[in-house]
Length: 335
Image (cartoon, rainbow, N blue to C red; front, side):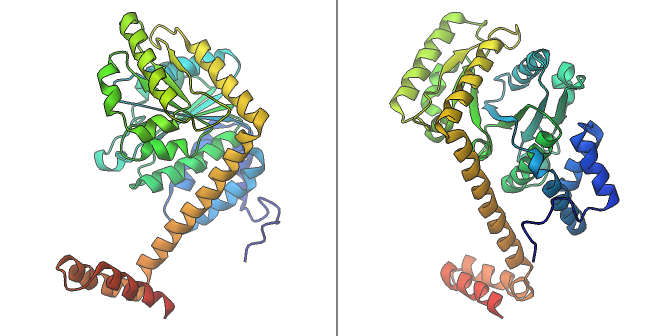
């Protein structure tokens, strides 16, 4: 049984101790190697990864975590690059991570091509990591959460988690960051009806990008968004999500965006909600890991592996009910 009060890093090998020291020194190579270790599915690598994370845990939690999502073409990469370069000019370091469940299917990822953030990827103060191709959204999210902690331990002040608006990816990202921002286009007025209500409800800020293309349309879309958000109950009683417009390409409105981020953090820290939100997220993450572990343990049970195909076929053909098959399979765990 693991002693939760044990000294972090006490059981590390010399090689892993070197990784920990490298991450704490802010070495990008050590950080990249540590993230590769946590993304590995090998059992021995997972054991090492947990030891490395445990050793680094006391050095995490100081960064602001921002989720950014938006429809394809909304200019996420241009915006993140413009924001990143501006933050570096303000003396900050930032890490950009991605959650893209489709990367395992397509073989690519939304951050796979670093040329989309060419200026940012050349800066020593920035760390850009493509989405892990772990398959399921849950698997990808788990690795990204752990990568986020490693980046914090390496001294990055701002962690940006980028996602594409696919399936549950936005809700997943919102559940691991402090602030969730939705990027929209100025011609998206017609699409406002089609936006999933659940996504609007988790947005802490709506950003209308490419505002320079059509200032009049931008003003109309901002008004529509303000009305839409006004009709919904905000996620926090201490924060009313603002709707701002900017042009990432022209580097206009970036400082105003960051001013809103700082206002958000100040408002939630003053009320205690900032810390409690992180505590709830950590607890939810633990339960997700337990659920995933139990599912894996269940699927690997010898009796389940033997009988699952036949019972699945019986459910499909109507020879047994889903409930009866489930109880039978779960019963094998007691033997």
